[in-house]
Amino acid sequence: MSRPSLSTLCGMIASLSLLGACSTTPPHRAELSTDVVTGKAGKVGVVMSAVPMPDTSFPGASCLLCLAAASVANGTLTKYTHTLATDDVVAYRAAVVNALKTKGADTVEITDVLDVKKLTDVTAPVADSPKKDFKGLKSAYNVDELVVIEVGSLGIERNYAAYIPQGQPAGFVYGKVYIVDLATNAYRWQLDLSVTKQVEGAWSEPPSFPALTNAYFTAIELGKDQILSPLKQ
Picture (cartoon, rainbow, N blue to C red):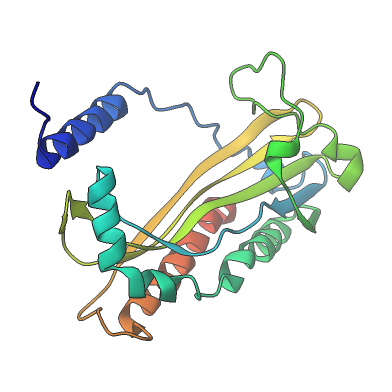
C-alpha cells in the first residue's frame, strides 16, 4: 500500500478538526446576575489563575511537519514573544474589583493564584454549575461570590494554510471569566474571553517587532474591555 502524501495528511487532519468542531454543541453560558454586581448577593471576591507565558500560535498548520515548518520560520518571533510582559493582564483583577465597587458591591481582591485543577471534582455536576467544587473557598476567603479570571493563552498568532502563512499576524488573548455562588456552587456568569488584534502595516521588524508588540498590548486592553463592559452596565 502506498503512503499518502504530506499534503494529503494535512488535508485529512484539517478535515477531521473541522468535523469535530461542527459536531460540538456550543455550551450554555449563564447570564450575569445583577444582584452580584450590585452587592445584593453578598461579598464578592476576585481571583485569577496563573497567567501563562506569552507564546506564538500557528492556526491552520494542521500536520506535525506543517507546524514544525511554521515554528522554524518564526523562531525569532517566538523567542521575542516569550519576553513580552503580562503585567497588564494581571491588572485585570484590580480592574474588575474597581468596576464592582463602583456598582456598589462589597468587593475584595484576592491576590492568591488560584489553581482550579487542584479543587475537588464535583461527583454529579449539574447544568450551570462548574465541574470543580468551589464551595470550600467561601470560608477560605470570607466571600459569598467568587469572580474567577482564567487566561488560557496569549501572545502572537499567525494563520497558516498547511505550510503557507496567511495574512498578517495578530496579538491575542484567550480565556474565560466566570462568577460562582460559593453557597450553591452554581455559575452566576460565564464569559468566553476571546480577543485578537491584527497588526497594522509592516510587522517583520526584529529584534523588537514594534508593530506586533503594539498589537499584543492592544489585544490585552481589548480583553479588559470585554470583561468590564458587562459589569458596568
